[in-house]
Length: 407
Image 1 (cartoon, rainbow, N blue to C red):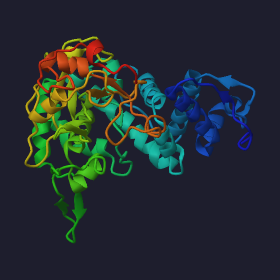
Image 2 (image 1 turned 60 degrees about the horizontal axis):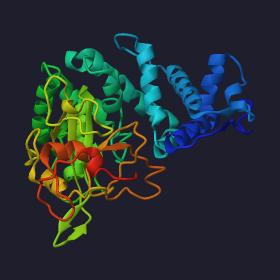
Image 3 (image 1 turned 180 degrees about the vertical axis):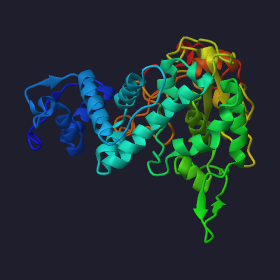
Image 4 (image 1 turned 90 degrees about the vertical axis):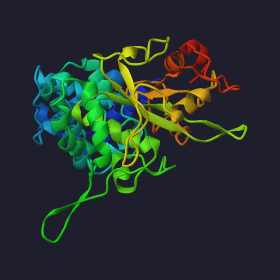
């Protein structure tokens, strides 16, 4: 194809999300499979969008080009969509949403050498997310923007992406029939949290061709960030963050919106030490949760969000919609204005960086970007927070009063 060894168009960005979209354009224009798909669709060996080094793209146009290229490549390999209410439109919007906030580490994963394997992984997430939405009444009622942000994404933090293990189809097979038998998202969420401790998600073939169940999800203290992804947790066990990510993946696999929330601090023996605690927030607008708007960026549908810690064998997690002792530890150790001694909630598309104890350097805030919202106002106004010098939970801060001054 012409232009494969020449310059690609310029793309100008002024923030991390824009830079990532420009990088997508570069990857699409220099990857043979996507160039071929675009040329085939155009019935032309030249690709003007990639072969004019004098043209400067803005990040949104670059995203449109990348979305069209990946969908063209996918359709040429048999990816079709089954989804009520404009399936092709929904699939296009879903792919565009994922690509629009895809961090550089995942762009490298997608285009870095195993393109067709990672393309299959990405499109499978889209296909199954749309399938759950069209197959269960409670999931179909979820607003489209909530679905995109909290059901569709294949990750929440900086966990391994499990390209080969493929948690979404695995958990869909394990949990969807059960979840879809319930009339509401909350009743299904309760059921899944109770099933995870008894779930064996690994299996091996034995001599007689029967499946032998693997180990259940188990608790293992102080494992973040070594064991975070569902595959890693299934193999080795994990602590709060890993088991929360398993619960989040199980929820998303059946169509329940979910995100990670938590803190990265602890106060011991008169000094701050590195420690963290994370849990799941899931969305259900039919039942009021513990939160009310507090002036933060995550105020939208604040009352629809609910809390639950990750579950595992021998560990049922804390209470529903109220703080466990570990969650109260986060609240008590909150320091107004601090970027780490505070509460965060994850978001795929947010341009605000979500720092964690192990993921808070220049690489993390660029190549490994994780988006989020500072949620201290929502939590403090509901359950009370400390103030940095006293850990008594008597301060019911608004977001303006407790949030970081810079991020």
